[in-house]
Length: 257
Image (tube, rainbow, N blue to C red; front, side, top):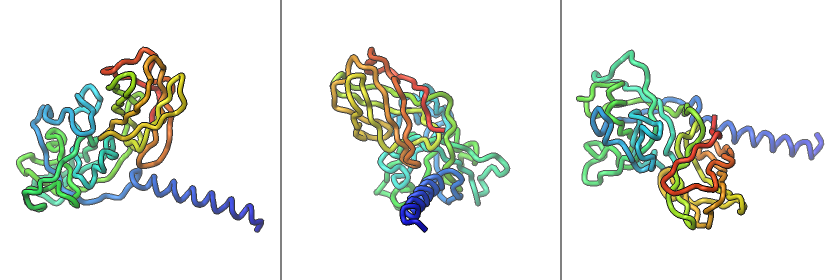
């Protein structure tokens, strides 16, 4: 075989392997075992806000079917926005026959080092644990159980409309909370581009927020978003107008599928 052709084949095969590996981490992923508890009440009011920074989850579009992930799953916020299919298993408290519930990661369940990992310290590393909003828990099991064994897997996030960007900061420091991400649901990194700048890499602040220390006021802003799971990159062109201001949320037409 021609050496140049051989090398090209190797490159193509390597790229196919990388794509297959990244996709398998969530699309069609195998079922895994974990445990689940719940927090808050039936109104899910206690689940508003959260470490991902989505604020009012009704306004953000996530509603009451959300989850706080243990540290092992949260990954310093890179799991924010991921979607999980959850089903109660192997417990008399399970609602057998009910469909699996899909929840979105919006918060972290912090470790409780004062309690044993198998007796109250459910979110201590390296445990894989889901602390569900109560309405989501009640879909799969009797809430009086307190804690249940579950099976779970990553699934594609189905979102309506484009990615949303909630702005904080000022003309010299832009902090953006990224919401309503479809497909893999998560973000690895973001870059911002003003009408008078090139692409500026934004640093990860915490959860689903990213920041840029640059003078961007008075410029229409575009964003380059890369998924944490798939490494796919998309562009939200002119997502915010030149008149953008802190405290406002701007909607793009771009999203992962």
